[in-house]
Image 1 (cartoon, helix red, strand yellow):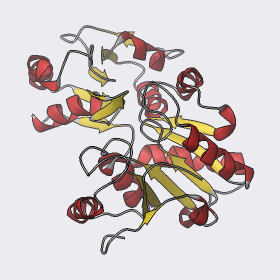
Image 2: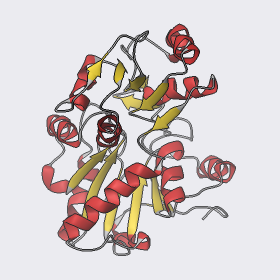
Image 3: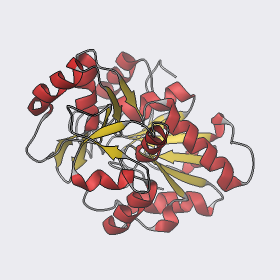
Image 4: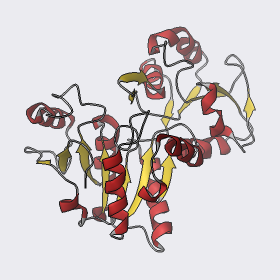
Amino acid sequence: MSQGAVPLIERFAPIAHGYDVLFCDVWGVVHNGVAAFADACAALGRFREGGGTVILLTNAPRPGAAVMRILDRFGVPRPSYDAIVSSGDVTRGVVEARPSQSLFHLGPERDRPIFDGLDVSFAPLEAADYVVCSGLFDDTTETPESYSGMLAAMRARSLFMVCANPDVVVERGDKLVYCAGALADAYAALGGEVLYCGKPHAPIYQAALARAASLRGGAPPPLSRVLAIGDSVRTDLTGAAAFGLDCVFVTSGLHAEHYGSREAPDLEALNAVFRASGVAPKAIIRGLVW
């Protein structure tokens, strides 16, 4: 779907019956980096009560089990979802496939659980065989420009970068902070080779589809029965469209202040963005409400 105005819906329930599985974004849809969105969690729970399966699909650069602990802390009820598939999980698969190579971890210490249980050899940047980027060392004070020298040094050595979180920015409370995707994009702009492990790229959707099949006790569900929910054109909407999924776009998340406000999104501006990107969601909703 890429032509015409996308409808604004007030509630999710009227379209929920058309799907068996939800691939739901986390940050900006289920929580804001500080606390859970109660209405969204309740809506996901209602979908599950009706027989649906909810897979939380996140670009968090850590294993799904670690994401679950964070969601617990934010107050996201476990009965609101069936499973979590993270870009951290996909990244672990890439690292496992390179057992004889050393890596430089570009990212904060809090992301180190991504390597737990793996046979990993860490090295300084000047000696590493490749780089795993999970974010900025300090996303409260730094920007991608802070890394221009490091990225140039990486490019000079033609180092391969694994991007464990393709998000460029996310909300943390009422602020936007840079993510690994911003550094990966800057490195790619220098001509560096980058593998993006999360949305909008196919591997994370393939992993989520396989998980849905295992939870439902059979073959993967038809793509026509899987709905993506997210708040980012770049990751959620583009990724869903490329994988062949319908998408409901949440306006109260990442793009809220760019297109009107959280309470009154500018639908004309949003539709112009969809047209420019060449993809459009099935519907727009202010926040996920049953």
